[in-house]
View 1 (tube, rainbow, N blue to C red):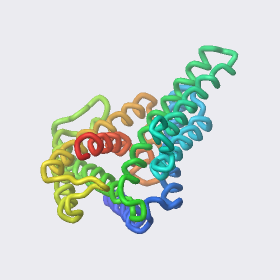
View 2: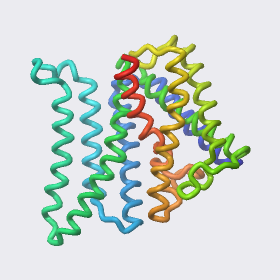
View 3: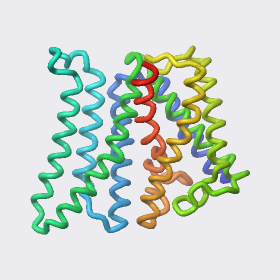
View 4: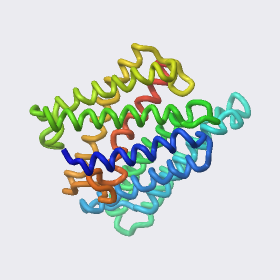
Length: 289
C-alpha cells in the first residue's frame, strides 16, 4: 500500500470535515468552495479532451458550467421567493438558465468558418458541461437540502459514504483483489474491491443512522434505506470511476491532473460523487419524501 497516498487522502478528508462541520450551508464561502471544485474539475476535463485531440472551448465551457451551478445554488436558497404564483414554479428560472447556456453553445458554433470544426467544438463543450457542472449541481442540491443555517450535513453524509466506499474498495482490492471488474477500462479494480466498498459504505450508513437519529438533511431514513444506500453508493460510485477511467484511457492520460500526489486532480477525486449525487437526490425526492 502507498502510505503517502493514504496520509494525503486523510489530510484532505480532514480539511473537508472542518469545512462541512463549521460553515453554514447558505454561507457564500460554501458557494465559493463548491464553485471552485466544479471549475477545477471542468478545466481538467477539457484538458483531457484536448489531450485526445478533441476540440472544445475550455474557458466558455467552464464559465457556462459555473453559471449553471451558481443558478442551482440560488434556486435552492430562494425557491420560495421565486414562487410568485402557481403558474411560475420556482425551478422555471433554473431551467431557463440551463436552456440559455445550452443554446448559447449551439449559437457559438455558428461563428466557425469550418462547420465540422464548429460542430465538434460545440459537442465537446457541451459534453464537459453535462459531465461536470450538470452532475455537480446535484451535489449542490443535496448540500442545501437541510436547514440552511446549519452546515451541509447531507453533503457531508454523501461525501463520507463515497470516500469510505472508495477507501474500502482500495484496501480490500489491494489486499484481496483477484477477479478483475473491468480489465479493459481499469485493470486495478476488482470485484473483491467493490465488495469491500459495499461493506465500508454500509457500515458508514449504519453509523450515520444512529448518530443523525435517522435523518439525511430534511428527510427521514430507516435501517432499510441505510442498507439500500450502502449498496447503491459503491455501485454508482464505481460506475462514475469507470466512466472517468474510460475518458482517460481514451486519450492515454493517467490522471486528470497531478496536483495531489497519488490522487491525481480534482476530477479524479470527485468522479464518483458526480454519479452518486444525482442518485441520492433522486432517492431522496422519490423514495424518502
